[in-house]
Length: 51
Length: 236
Image (cartoon, rainbow over all chains, first blue to last red; front, side):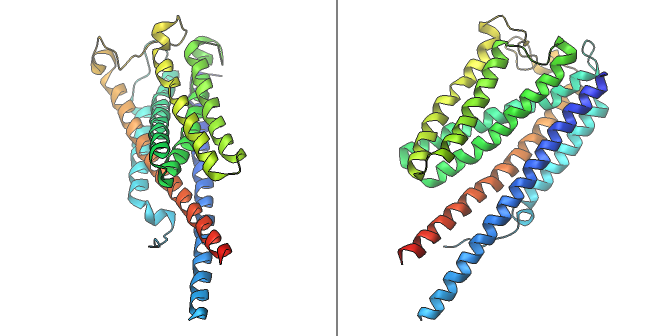
């Protein structure tokens, strides 16, 4: 492999891995946010029923 | 009081946008503007990734150290959430540092890997914090897991001064610092254009790091809120 090949491999792997991590983080964030929203809305509706 | 939920891109928008700009400018400077190194040639450009990556990993483990210490002292969940978030991102950047170093080492040293003191201690650092993350998932009792992880998070941090001093204490293949040297100022030793590339790259990594940390911290916070709500519901 020539010099630029090593540079391209390093930059490609680093930014590829960071993008994958960002994607996984966004998925975890969205899942947790949706679950929290669901729990809060059922909590709120249960509160209304109690009243 | 319950926090209002917003999508990631709205909540951390400014930080994310700043990180994106800095990373793009850093990439341009590192790959186009900075000249090739007189001895290493183009391969030296990998250093614009390698140095910021390890500094971000150190910063992350410092936050694990602080968060763990505060958790053991005050027992506040937010400190544990911070330590956990920082450890996860620290592992990511340590792994990237080792990969970048390996790709740089092949054309420069002639090997992908060698059991040099600094490399070995960095691999140990990675294993310690992978262990930290595994420990958290293996212990079922949440409080016990947080306490055990906090102890490991503090002990693990002691590896960082060893890594830093390894190039002075032992005869290593890894070179001593080129920029942060006690005998010379950074711009006396490195071409200004290279120093600029390194600085912009570091700023980009730093902004990206705080963006990732803020999102990962919020994920931890929300998981905690979910657990609390489920417990509350189960108690009724």
